[in-house]
Image 1 (spheres, rainbow, N blue to C red):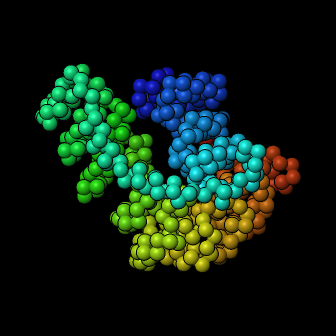
Image 2 (cartoon, rainbow, N blue to C red):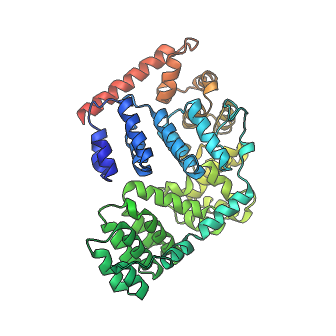
Image 3 (cartoon, rainbow, N blue to C red):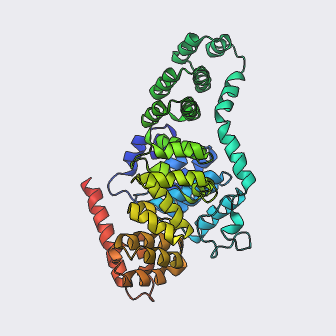
Length: 443
């Protein structure tokens, strides 16, 4: 049933199925399901299955993420998004998963946001430096983003001359005819998309958004929906575009905001406009990953950095967090202290702590703040598994309790005889599992 619901676009029903109390992970069934999604080129179904199954007891998250990465490995941007989701979930990726992500990012000439010294990629060790995104690649990406609206117009002009009401109405420039054709029960997804593109071209934004939001299934209209968002924003209707996005289904809402950000980071003026109007709730605008931070080139774009610093000095949380994340990732202790003192936000600002050395630098710079120790330690544990015991020894001496360590790490050290607190770690894992079972039973 879960497979059927996902293929029919009935995400809510699939979510309820996967949240059934007592549901156990069935690897054979999941493998078969994901294989079907891949064979049928149903990326949306695959993505939904990975995201919705994270709370299933015993779920093999590594396998599911690996399947997802393998499917989209030619799209480095998408692979980078997956890495962000893995971080947000708190999953500790295996060497195989990290290697697959690193290979895809390297092939797409994107920076690898984690240490690769423990990975063997195609018979050779690689480092972050060897995979830095080339400037020509960045320029191409910027040009591609800037031409999205133009591509929409071109697509509308090249509609095949078919003998159907939609094609006839578009050829005649008959907006009313386009609206009537869309309302016809026989209107196909292709005709719907053509009609919406026509409305976008003629700036009939209200009508286009109404039609998209009223559609029985959003998925086939995702591309024209994003074309609508970009066209509205390019024509000074940012608030209307934001209202339209807020009414989208949750999954597509997140994708839309990501696409806007992806375009904005290639243009300093556009990004400043985006972040300066952001509130604390608009986290997607300022909690940037390493790739997006690199694209901003804050060390070169001194004008943008100056504007952000001026904004941060007024207490503007988004700009302060962004600058703090960039400083933390770069290991710039002085800058990190500066932004930390303006607005202490450990969960948002502590970022890019990928080994014990970086952990020591961040914790020492911020006066061994307990919230920083907890956040930075869990980041380091997720990125540098070979230093697990050393990281735990360092942080627990500073007062970190094992109760504040992520479950994936505790499971790992519970089986390490050389770890003196392995029994305690195992007990915490058992308690968390029992609590989870109790919660699922109550629901």
